[in-house]
Length: 137
Image (cartoon, rainbow, N blue to C red; front, side, top):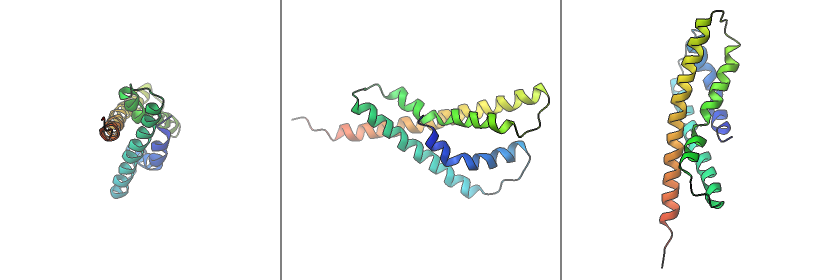
């Protein structure tokens, strides 16, 4: 559930990138791609910190893996979008199916690890910040 907001911030640019990779079209707007990448990382960090805050308010202090999977859940939406995008391609052999879904699974795994790490480190920073301000007298 936590990945729909960061995915919503980058799905339009994902369409253009996938068109350039799979339909042999040119992509030349790398400045916009960099800004969208930064927005993806920022929204991923914000959503993960928000979910981490809700966990801590509910006195659930095992937040490590939950923050990693919350941040990385963007990859599930990316892979789902790649299944939706595959309908536009003209694939007729088994090898094209294997290549497409293999490469998209690897790309989704990389996105999962990247955004999951951003979510984990942003939650770690948030927790150190709020627990560091507690004074015990």
